[in-house]
Picture 1 (cartoon, helix red, strand yellow):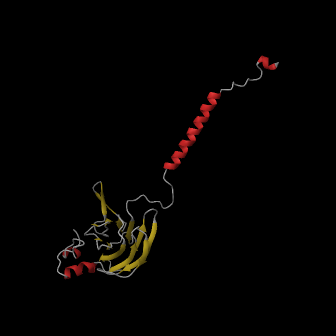
Picture 2 (cartoon, helix red, strand yellow):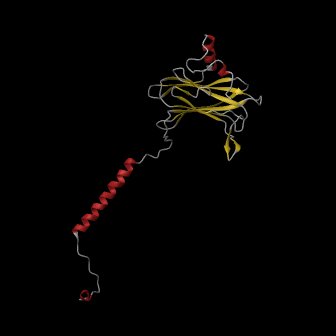
Picture 3 (spheres, rainbow, N blue to C red):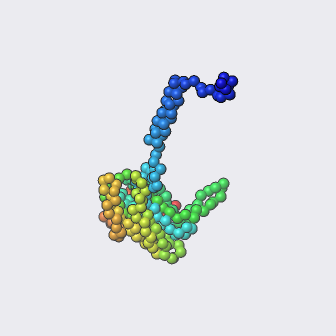
Length: 228
């Protein structure tokens, strides 16, 4: 009786087509969400998006005036260093000269960089042993310098292969930081610190009569004279 006077709201008439359309939209939205999950990159700790396979860094105390140099030799005998920044798959990405010319120009003014760091990247896989050496090119303070060398495998995730400190104490001092061996798939299979002079590698070639080292393209004088 009361319903005749419109006191109770009537239910809307059932519309099967509208219900089907609504359910179809729900299914499409769900499938779109699944597709987004499938194409989105995984957010994993240590994930590195890099074209390099390994990164080798040398650093020493900020604002230190001494000049240290990083040398890296690959299994084929190629050596990356400040006179030969690209050798095989090796690339010297940053050469730091200590207190000499380590600055940037901003609005015509020199701004000194406090960071002391050299970086070599390995951009391809060559199975065999790699040697990482550090040379104390200029010891301006006359005091020992504590340096740190780190080797990281970048792909598929970042992994520290080696990380250690050591001391250089005079101009011309050369230390083998680490020697590591990788297999054909880029897996590190051995790490040690057996000494091996890379500067002596240059000198040996020249003692045998070569004016230019065939592996590095470096002349006799270049190992003794720093770039301008």
